[in-house]
Image (cartoon, rainbow, N blue to C red; front, side, top):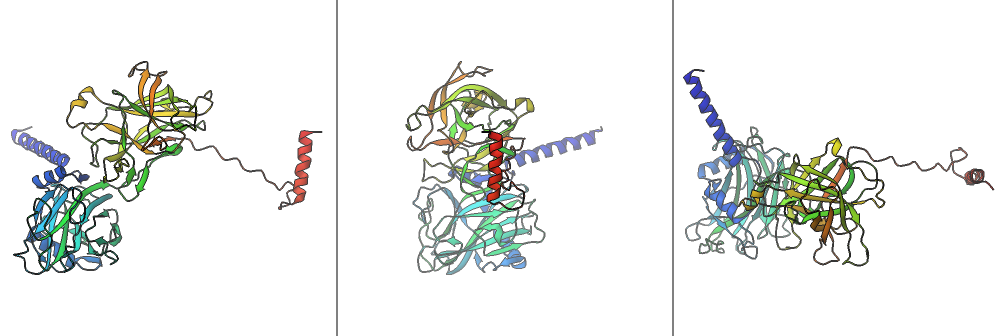
Length: 536
């Protein structure tokens, strides 16, 4: 290779590496901005910034040219906003309770009366594919008084490069009082979702009042997400939230902006046993009722839950749900378990099912798998019932382990009651525990489903983790309940098999004389058969 070609190759390699690094840092399609730090970092890094007047005129020009459904975007005067992050902690309404972005424009003493709009954009800084995604943002649109100082309309748009003139697809929603029919209610945080696999007004929840799309728009090439609002101004509204609490002017509040892959919370082939997470809000992304119960192979406890094996089909695949404590992004944290230990244990029955302080628990380990080739998918967000005032908590992921044929679990025919226990625990490298980016795995709880509480196992004999551990006995089980021993909690998991269920036996045909109808004569024929088969 000559020197010129060598220099070109090195330059291309460096550029490619920089692009890959940038893609990994900024341009993955899935993200979440929820906490004060997340919003502050996005603002400091330039991923969140105000829309300029030329950008706004381009946005409005496309609304005028490419309206597809519903009403047009209202005519307004653009005002560039000031942006700051509010940490939350208010009581709601004009004092937001969670962290988010304040978009404030102009002071009441310098802005003439009229209708105004302002906007902000999220910049991926590259242009990822947003097809088959769910875009979610929560908006609080204030009505400051009964004089007419209020937010009238909000919108959300997606834009391809270039910055000026890039094709846009967008939706807008009217704001109003309860009972007005407006999809956005004043002073009430409202979650807006966009299903990017769909188009039109109905792609939005709540259904939008207007939809436009440039024919050249490409959902696989989105660099910017735009959000805006327009207001009516008659002077003298309430102060903006801190740190602009001394400012009197129009403002709006955006919080919990995220993009997630469109997903379903459940997967399986032929179901052998299923107790999936409990969905309390089946919008996409789903909201899941439960918390992450830490289960650590290296540092006990491990968590186990009982299930019933009521046929001879093998367990060929294992699926479970879990979160990482303190992690709320739709991709997993930087430090993942290097493996999961999955165990199946025999059962110690509950000595007194009528006594809530007696419980069953796992006994002897009869099968195990150290899975290093598990796969994951985003499944939703938790809402921890132990903290009813909290909003969405950690991200929930579904994990799937497809077993090789020599790893399948078969029921032991000598186990009479068919009750087994499944344990799942994360295996980390020793140095992971001291890393500041460490977010430990927790198995997802769910309200009671079968038999007895899930348990935390605080001891194993021989001492854990002795491998191989087949034959180990679980010790010191602690039932998982909340808020009292009468309210059991189980774990979210599913066991599947590659074999269909056994066929259901056909019921006997009561038409014994084959005349096409069932009469008393058929019972007489049946009696004759019975006497012949039984004898005198």
